Every structure is written in C-alpha cells, then in structure tokens.
Length: 484
Image 1: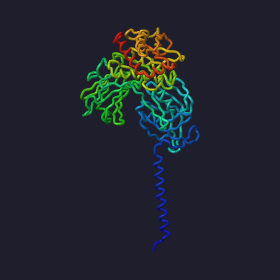
Image 2 (image 1 turned 90 degrees about the vertical axis):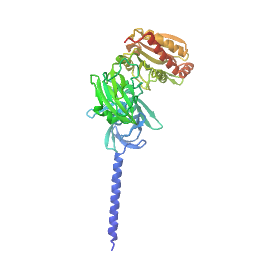
Image 3 (image 1 turned 45 degrees about the vertical axis):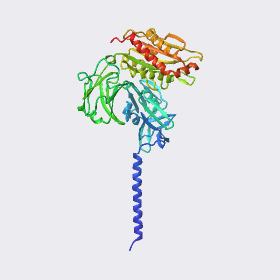
Image 4 (image 1 turned 30 degrees about the vertical axis):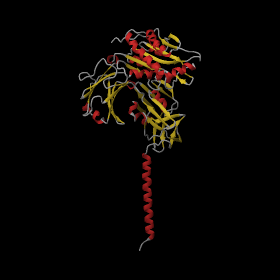
C-alpha cells in the first residue's frame, strides 16, 4: 500500500535539493562573471556604498573584459589600473601598487605617473600635478574585493597615449599613438646594414616563412622595435633556440606576443635611450642591428605639430589650431613615408600633448639635422600673413646650418604655398622649442586663425602646406647636407 505522506515528503525534499543546487550554481556563475557594461554595481567609494553604472573599456579599438566595473565620478571616467594597463601589454605601460603607502605607479617609456589613493594630487615625471579626481581603492560587493582605480584621460594623456570617449557606446578607448613604419629592410636609407656578421639580435625564421613576410615599426615613443608577422608563431619565436641576442649595456628585453591573427616581436634596448634600427633578412634569419640614430641614418629630421591633447592652441571661426597643425604634419609625413632617404621623428602623430621640453628632447636625443614646429597664428580679426620664427642665438646643425638660414629656407616654401601676406622672419630667441633644441630650428606660423577668410583658406589647403614643408626640407639638404 502506498504511503502518500512519505511520498509527498520525499518529493518536497527532492524539490528543495534541486532548488538549492540551482541557486548555488547560479551564485557561482555570477561570482565568476565579468562586469557588464550598462549594469549598476554596488561599490564602496571613499568609504561610502553607492551604485555605479558600468562603463565599457577598449584598448586600440578592442573591447576589454574586466571584473572591476569602470564608472564615472566627478565627470571623470575611472578604470581599473590592472585591467587597463597591466593586462594590455600593447600599451607599453608598467603598473605597480604599494599597499603599504597606497602608492600607484604607471610608467611608459620615459614617462612616469605617481598617484596616492584618495589624494587630489600626483606627480608626472616628478612634477606635482592636480588630478581631476583622486585615484581610488574601491571595494566591489559583488566580487568581495578591492580594486585600484585611476582617472582614464589624465593617465593616458600623461603616458603619451590617446584616450577617447564615445557617448554612444559609453566606452573609453585607450590607444597607442601611431608611429612611423619602416619596411622589412630598415625603412630610412641606412648607413649600415644588418648582416650575419653585424647584428644585435638574430631571429631564426620558421619553415615556410618567406622573404618580405614581416613589417617593422620603429616605436621610438616606447623605445623599441616592433616586428609584425601574420599568423601565430608565438611559441616558435619565444623559444630560446630560435633567437640569439648579443647583449650589451643597451639591451633590455626580447618578448613575443600574439593578437588578432598576428605575432609581434619586441626588441627593447634600455628604455631611457632612443636607438635606431637596421633590419635585413635571408631565407633563414632576420637580422636586427641597433645603434644611435646618427650611426644608422644619413639625414634626420624632427617634425612637431604644435599644441595637442588638452592644449588646443589658438581657436577661431570654428577652427582649432592643434587639429590644423596635425593635419599639416601628417600630410608631410605621407610624403616622407615614401622617401627612404630620410628618417623623420614626429613629436606627435595623434591628438596628444608632448610637453615643450619633450619636443626639444626628442630632437636632442636623436641629434637631428633639422627641427621644425608647425603653428597657426592668432591676433585681431584683420591680421593676415605668413611668418616664420627663428633664434638668432640658436644652435647650428652638424652641417653648419643656422636657425636663421633654415627658417628663411622653409619660409620661402610655406609663403609660396599660402600666397598670404609676407610677414617675413621674426627673431624669437625666448621660445622654448627654439631655445632648447640643439640643432637648426624653426617655427612656422602658417596664417591667422582669427581672420575668417584666412582661416577658411587654410583649412582647405592643409595638405598643400604639408607638401610645401616636405619640399622645403628636401631642398635644404641639397644646400646643407649632413656631414657624417
């Protein structure tokens, strides 16, 4: 005879066990899941529990997953320092945190940021700097642990990265600035060639990898050479038997990564120096030789697009100086990229802000033959014309070229391109980039953004001005060749 009470009790017990098992499994899945953009999370910020909507994270356009939800505070997007910088090696940033004194340190190349949790200030390359909002040690109730958060735009800008915010996708995107790209034979015409008897690093090629199957990028902003190869060869190139390093006092590291269908090899000399690279290949090996830029290249130029990042420069009639100067420099770059006889370094190739000292330091570090800074003028609405600034007390290039002569040369080309009123050459020895750059230096003021007609004309001819500057630089080397 069936005992209905026992059966009912048994079924109830089974139902409870199933429900408990499901609930336990569900909790475990939730605990292990990454933060979801647009979801509200309970966080303890500055000692106060509050709910914050999770923001998205991208690095070089690729979505990044994080257990630590990003959020906005004081109109500033805050991100986990670990998940943005430590987990994304392509940004070239090293991150460390000291729990003892709650100190956050971010380094990229020669740039360094030091912050302290809950403090309104930090240090950028040793200089005390006010933060838009303090770095934070934030507790996540979901994950039951603390994460270290830093302001996104502030840290990216001061590390030489590009940061952009998309309101439509509610995401912040951290990007490495583009740099000049060399071909697999070394790019700019080199004075020396890498070979089996002259190399710093030798890399054995895997079977089936033919000649011309890689590209190289002189990532001088991060003090390294990047080799890019299609396909996943990470394990092969990371195997010690497949590469040889002639260590010297300048060598720092050799590393291999794989991302989005490409293998990347990074050759990094000591981080506080800029090295130039000669690259060659045979059917069996890739040879890399590095030395100072003057030992590798015949002609070296540094181009500077004025202002950038948080520094807009002059504005007027709907135009912004930093945008116009960058377009001019990038137009010149498009021509230099096709001319292997010149090695050109750029202080910026995107909307970033190098300090004035960093602009001069780049030229000094590579012992440039020429330095040119591109600007747009501003004054009254009636002011017009093109002028070029020089330093009568400035340094000479190795060829004997002085600031005045160099400025006069480039002024002729720019003036012919603009067809604006000729305001001539102006002696400005006090300008930082002209005073501190230890070679022939010039600063060209294309025209006046404050003049409505001239501003419109300039905006329509930025590529024309870029080509004129390119032609002026090429011509100057005919008259004053490098003496190496």
